[in-house]
Length: 553
Image 1: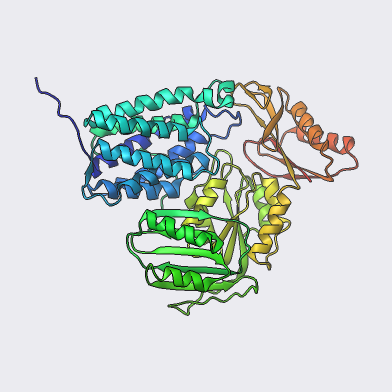
Image 2: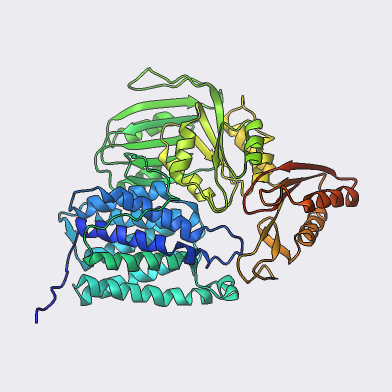
């Protein structure tokens, strides 16, 4: 009897097969993971978003010929970062990034259980840092516990399969406990969907340990990839602009360490705001708003030679730039351009008429990736760009896109619905500067309430409302407020609640599923007769998922 040889090292080839196998298993199970979403709207987000993120990482490594484990991890992190969609996808991408950063600097092309455990710990740490308010009972919790047990298991075994399965078992145990950590999960009777996605990916990766020549399975929902050079990102913080000089430059320094990045960021935070650091193997890109660019330049010259220096006086709204190495400047047609995410032909037309330069089709069921948003940004010939996500699940991807653009000043306005995006655009000033537009557009978000009517895809108890599969549910400012088997009754209940706010204007946007429904005419008549003192508008939004979207201002 031949004794099976233990696997004690993971090289680049094996890691590539693990990533692809994990991505394929996640893709095969994305519908099941979507069904775990506690919010009963058919948005298809967590499983789909994590799948698309994993597939982007897998496609990045599929064609590699290297057996260097770090090179493979770095490519996967780059792909995941650009393919990350929605909150779950962006957080998932940070696990890839943290894993890769931990392997940087290894003198070996293969890793054992000890190095793998260190990489998992850094993956968890990086993902936690990416979230402003980490919440336990989520993917983050599952990842942290898996990393903790990995550290213990690395001391007891060198067998990679045994080691990995111990990690998986711990992840499965903590996943089952997530309903005890988040009341909303217990109320719905499900485990955390992001945690389930992570477990699914990891179990597939284990299957890939002994499976050679893995290929990425076909996924018709995945957009074509575009090769982008940056492979590692540092930190970004964006606050209200209060400093006068927008200062940008490259520091020509190879292999910039994480500790050096932390020290530089700590210094920059004492000098201004809107700080961005983006690094690859040879350079570090610095962006800061400051009142003392000379001091910043003097300090960073101690790190390495500078290039592509550009300083703009925002207070004087100077359009020119000062360059250290080049006097060439692109001809800017607009001071501030706008990129918006929209669902439906009607909404697209509205956004374009209000001055949006590029509209990205997306929303529920189709969250655009960070790379999709970057491609939209690149279509706009403007010095500064404002992004309107118009969906709460796209905000993180939009902010991730900011990291990937180092040649424009970009700000994300946290519009969570399309009516909020429209309200912001009504305050958009094409000739104004970025600071003026951000202040006025963000200020408009609180002036609008958004109501939405859709159907429930599962039984649930949310926000104190008992919802049955197939019911029509009314959502007011992202909170379920009513449900009924009859569409007309549910819509009228939602409208009544919105009118209690006392708006001056109510707008009804008719969705794709309702545009030929006679009930829409009945609903219009009901609003006009019941609320004669309120200005009422109606438009064809053409949006998917939501039969009606209401805007109250």
